[in-house]
Length: 473
Image 1 (cartoon, rainbow, N blue to C red):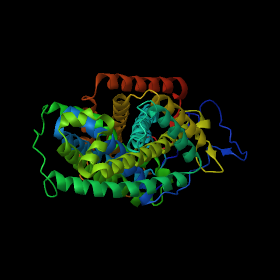
Image 2 (image 1 turned 120 degrees about the horizontal axis):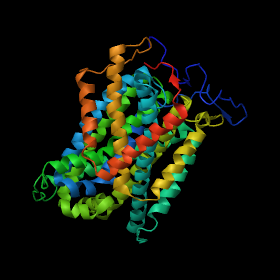
Image 3 (image 1 turned 60 degrees about the vertical axis):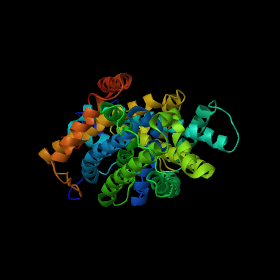
Image 4 (image 1 turned 90 degrees about the vertical axis):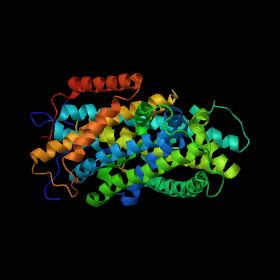
């Protein structure tokens, strides 16, 4: 890169950090401010975070819910989500190669649009990832109960939340012990999961078109009309949050100029194709109404339909892997969002402490894990998913605006290794479609999302109004 990226350190107009000079702790456990996260993630790790996060909800939690709202046209809902995600992934890739720092969308927006916008987005990203992670953990709990049922142990839905809470705490502890450990788990889960899905979707697709079985009876593509396709797209957009989570760990990726764009764009393309095929296979196995009746674990019955008991077991196991990988990657990304905001002094500096033994932001991980467990205990699947989508869509729209602002001003430090093709059409469309999708969400999700943004703006006014970010336009 031709020039230095903007500093991560937030200061006030006098050059000092707000609330006084931060103290650098030098005991054997922690250090702040000058410590950096190690670059231990390669392209495989980046793809595993992106694919592993996205593949969980879209395939193993949403098919029944989406089919109930939009019928077979739910495949179109997932396709719309993929297009919107690509329109944002390309601008995000350019910004990430210019600013390969932990924090992702927060970092880009704060440098292009200022500390207030950065604070609202950064703190909202924290909460958005918390909502998303809780959603993934609840899905994991349902699949854990289904696994027991397939083994002949019927326990009902009572253990769903306790199991989700247990594993949420476990993923937090795992991430404290090192990013590399979490990445190794992620790589293994995703490789095994993709192998299972490749076999299942290939057979299911051939069966659905009658090449290896009886062709499925045709169903009207959009039985509920066009509007539910858009509202369902807003609901399932949670499935596409993984590419942005790659950007939150940009500060830990090797060769970011090459690996970041490939990981973000590649993960959207791969997962988008898998989603469309999955909805086709699922709605071919059962009518939309029947599929919706199966709820969050509808894909287990789809697996049973195509491959008998072996298919049900394979899907249950795949669902466990998928929701596990989504939750694990989201805990990692949530902590990095907190870490980045704290490094800029928009949160107390203690949140950016790095554990010297493991090289991880252990305080930030605690601030991620605690709220995640609280929201997981609610078990409100659709609300958790939509609030996460709301907060991410705001960030995605502003990422596109940030790119336009930086291209217009071209500060000396802005020297990306990747530039968006089709500029300015791509970022303009990305901003418009991101903001437009918010309008199709449930009112409750919109109210909660707006409330969170107002709270974050209030925090900025109270705590960080004097912060000026180095590198800010």
